Image (tube, rainbow, N blue to C red; front, side):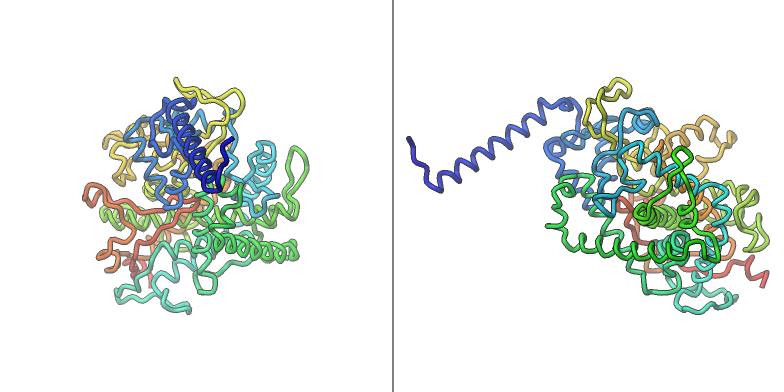
Length: 531
């Protein structure tokens, strides 16, 4: 027998490990069931490649790059497929698609033992939760929530010209410009103030107080960790985040505990509140099929989900719209004209037929959601037993599959000149070349609020906030890019060097990190005339 020294054992272990890694890599590249699909070599070998780009926040840009290079179907992980077509998107995210949410969604649970509407992978559990939340976001409920929402929007428009003070002041009429404001921040403050007021009966008051303005940064950090777990679920399953991302884990625990206390305080109030809120609806809502409602733990978990999801979509869409309108002065002038001719006072601007008639404003907001969608990467689905077929492609059980939103929104088959901001693409106007067919194609591929049975349950609420906020802002103020934005190109990605192809830079985490644009406001002429 050959006696092995300790050094010899280590050498043999290293040699065996190397053989295993090379053998695994060879199998995944050449013999795996998905081996025929193109994609980056490193991505075919290991999930850590995608995890790296999720951590960087550029995974949505990598999906776009890969699909432009490899075509409609891209393999972005050893067992992961991305498809860039509207038909594939419908096959994957349809109600009866033979898929479920991937296990990676567990990272959205504030507890490893309790799921919420986002993190629930079981279809029956998700359906139960969604049936209750649908009541919370119904048209009737929104009508009851409207006074709270309008109050926060009024606070937002009040601070735009006087953000350097904490005191309400009358609008100055001397034509002077207000301070430079990073609208990524102020749109965050509005989003959090609205959704916190709706969830807990009292807002975080970020628009008027600096006390809690660190929260968006905390949630961005948590979102970055969650996105990384999407790329490599082992980070969550093996609790590697506790080891390598200890500070983030501490922030998650601290934020969850703080939200839990907010929820407990709100539960103690019961129905003893001045204005109805979402918590009131969640307390009273019952599943029409089972008669069951949310438990105390579920109420806490769902309210946490609403805080994150409810603030991000509105904030990203608003800040992106500021960015694109200010980089396209002709479009800004056109939408200002539409709004200012439709209303005679700020108070008139509220949900209703008159606001709905502002077709071009709606188109501008929708085009911003297309160009800079919240949750810009891919919503992963796990293929169930029997596999799934899309077109000529069949994918076996346990494949991770999905369509990247950012890539779909820049698909030239549905969006001519996909890198140019064109609100006109959402309005039928045959005389200018925008036929019903073209607009219908754009609508079919749009997934700014996700798609299928897992689409955003609060979509109508988000549209209410977006339309009222921007209409009131355009009615009250002229706006311009601040000097620091102009000199620093804050928030910009330039494509081909043309000013028409500036993109709003977002981080493609679960929520969208971003900065800018830096904007200055002054009272609009229509406002001066009415003073």
